[in-house]
Length: 300
Ligand SMILES: C[C@](O)(CO)[C@H](O)COP(=O)(O)OP(=O)(O)OC[C@H]1O[C@@H](n2ccc(N)nc2=O)[C@H](O)[C@@H]1O
Ligand SMILES: Nc1ncnc2c1ncn2[C@@H]1O[C@H](COP(=O)(O)OP(=O)(O)OP(=O)(O)O)[C@@H](O)[C@H]1O
Image (cartoon, rainbow, N blue to C red; front, side, top):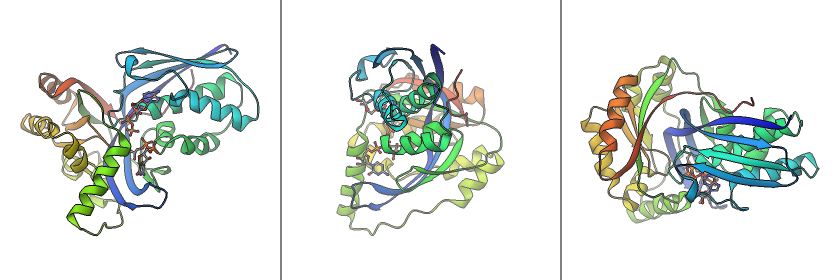
């Protein structure tokens, strides 16, 4: 095989409950991930060494050196296999960068799947999941896709059954937010408020809404403990959330660490309408309509 192509979805977190700060600098989570139809494409071609190039709207914001998560993923896979391998990785980016939709994690997951195939390693998903967890907390879910609950720092996953498709609009903000800074702001706000941080609990009404495919019920149950921190760092996002609610979204929240905002729609037409409305906001770089859940990356 001389070239392998995979498509990897972005995510939105339909529940993100953040526990107290751990000694290792991470937080224990209840993190309900939902993969949506905004895809990066990762191509792995035969080559002497591991390199990456990036094309698409967001290309200028993505490192092409050792800081690129796809390169780190390919190296980690070669190390796991105990051999020196090469791959020319070509990423076509559609997932907003530093937007809270796990774009870098998607590229890392795509590189793992594509190189596993290119190099004929045949490693099972469980092995790739272990390598993924070392690359970042979101990378295991980017391999899995669908809808899943993540505990620990978000890397320990179990599938969540869903009934039917949900339709979304995403308001992509100007600029990005650093995930580490948003978690740090969450800690700061909690310390200032002097509240005891409860252990995160999975929402049963949320699971029921996902299982039955009830968009109205899901809209009412969306929650994100990082939202206050993202709004504290980017106050303009409240205007975006408010605009989406006024336009009839069934639910509105910051996606993960932000600054992308996610809006649940009643159907595909409603999602297109919301995206069109949001795209005209001064706070918004662009807006996308998408649906979920969608599967994780598979080689072709
Ligand atoms: C906000 C989310 O996107 C929600 O899915 C994730 O929790 C972030 O996952 P990620 O981008 O893969 O994050 P990582 O690369 O593992 O960690 C980046 C930084 O985020 C913070 N971090 C991340 C995950 C976690 N459970 N607790 C944390 O406090 C830590 O400061 C860490 O140094
Ligand atoms: N392949 C990649 N694509 C995008 N960013 C990358 C990649 N590799 C490394 N990075 C770096 O990672 C930073 C975070 O990018 P990313 O798009 O993954 O953020 P995010 O979507 O907010 O992450 P998450 O939702 O997992 O917290 C970027 O600013 C960039 O410097």
